[in-house]
Length: 545
Image (cartoon, rainbow, N blue to C red; front, side, top):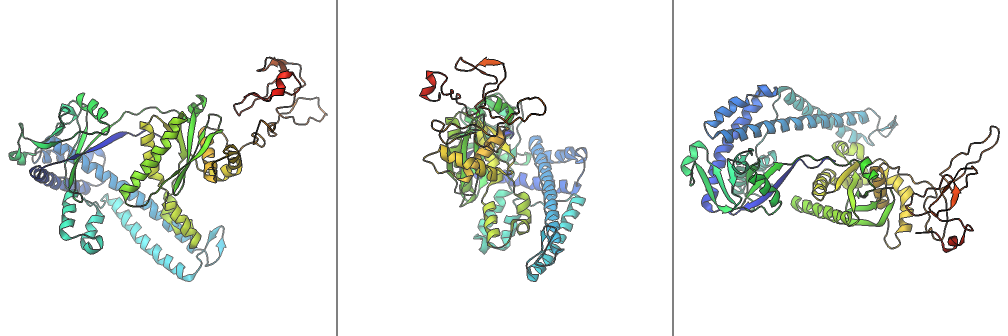
């Protein structure tokens, strides 16, 4: 997976009542013009970039704000418009997939199966699906119309908050509380960074020495300035404890940093967010990791826990299996914190075992979540499976793991999830249990081994007889490592194993400095091969370690 393209940090602004009032006035002024510019951008529709009239819109906004505020507003309007269009395209794809799945099942009689397609079990459910497909057709027609016209529906502050205005009792809000949240989300206090400007941003500037924050006021609000050149200086300061060194390196070198002032009306707090882009680094490929002999920490994502296992460069499990519980219940902020804690617990054993990266399944249930019951089953088993899928934070886990592993100096390899659980249980659960005498090995740990082997480019299936439960007591050769010996035509040539001596004349010296038939048997377990019994006195002491 690619490394994060940017960074974002936050610090609290402990402002006075006067500073908060000034920021509200500035945010309301800029927010009103930002919403007007967004509406104008939607009216322009889907046009090439050169025809979006951004320069014209920016000149009109400069007269009521400033050149830099106008640039930030037009940039935000264009980004919001493009994001809304992508959401429309995704919704159209989702609706088409769902309608096709339902119609395919409607074409099959109730209670029967035709060409692998199962009909609905009852007429009542079939009638409900017929009504549902009609509703979805209407929604799809509306989405198609908006895409054709290039006019997506955009609600500043969110459609959910707008709808809750008519259901205040159900939302647990009063009219005053709703108004505070609505106004806070519609403020515009975002300033794009500029390389070469003082401390990376001229509009919102943070002094690296004492952390004071100054803001350039729009032209109609210059009478509120308390600093030279029409600027307003806040009485509070910021420190940015998280990733402070990176932030200081950028602003001292006058490299661009984007700032955004955010109001949280629920807690009654103000925050300052700083963000910047990071240079892309070339990450090692799986083949490169295997060539360097590095280890990987393979992770199997499950509902309720993470199963992990360390895999060496040859694909063999090292050490005991690892189980990390994940409690993803509660509010969104708590779930994100629990997920970060679980990833932190993954990074610690990866560093302890000198792993070069982490490997996990590139899971994605977007299609299954779209069709819902049509593909994930009905009844009790289907409901259980849908709850399990809902409890897997695949996208959030992937994003969080990529960011945190990159900062820890670890590579992240995403592999195909096909048959990892089935083949891992079949080929690696029993050897793992034999290797781990005290830990309880589950099928999820075996799947983690399969994921690690696939990330290193090895096959998942284990050849029979490669590993024994105790090599000090049991001497066993891999019966699957067969090779035919060239013979004269017309004679039978039974397959020989790697331990069968080659009757050829060529000889070479093995590790014990003795003549042995060529080729020397290879033991992929990483241990030295056992010496043949009866060759000399050293063979009586057992195999070398």
